[in-house]
Image (tube, rainbow, N blue to C red):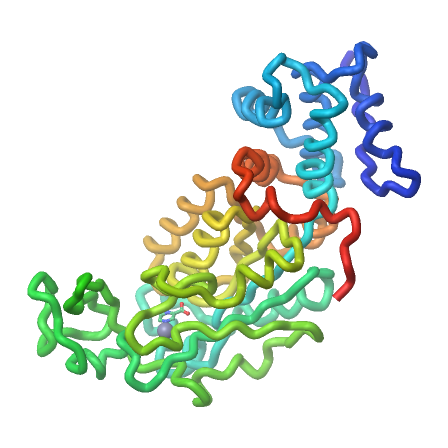
Length: 359
Ligand code: VGL
Ligand code: ZN
């Protein structure tokens, strides 16, 4: 019979939770954790509150163990466990959660770039209820609302295609270009650009957040796409990675570990934001039913990228338990362990949340 896995308790009123955890899992009492003992920790960590234990593939367990067995002797001693506890276990059990709601603006729902006219024929307004429900029921540490916020002469507008010279390699010339086509503007360097109807022009009705979207008390707005010369799908960086919004700096300041992403359009700005969140080093969760998109194949491609980068894709009814650390996904634990190998990662550099200061 398998020995029962003790629950992991990180609330540390007398400073002994770490030692208690180590001792509880040091089954043979040799004052160090073997791979088998560490595997039991992972069985206690990666489960949900309905009693389901998520299987972690053996080779992933090996790779995670290696991160914390700093001296490579095949055991995690008490000194090595400190790092594992402070940087990994604590973040898994008590994540710092940001919710990023991407571009829930009039133009994408019923205005000039109404996504229901695109090939997937999705209805943007269907995400309002599930997003509002999350805002009402889940206690995120921070909520961000991004806004696509273009000047009138923006490079992505089909009616501006003749404002700038095209590169000779552009597959379509300015006279033939139609909405949704991709052209190449002259450089240096040449720049690919998908052409959209004029949308989300600064200070217009189309650029406003939908009136039925709940705005959280401490909600933070992030504006993107403001440079007329370069488009910006991701809420982190513009498409050329020339400049960033203040999002990453704000996330770092709050010690964010986990980013929940949803909004419009699934395969454009939501996808680009989720991919950038993962590459910036965050544990990233895409909320599938709170997204609507342009093209079904492109949506599948976004999901593939998120899954292969150790992000997870969930339904909104799974979010509350995850935010509260009651449903702990092994993909996110693996992602965090891999980040901790890199001392420059945002998740290596955050203070470990011992004294999380209220806003
Ligand atoms: C978006 C197309 C053009 C989006 C923004 O928010 O997904 N899509 N600009
Ligand atoms: Zn745009």
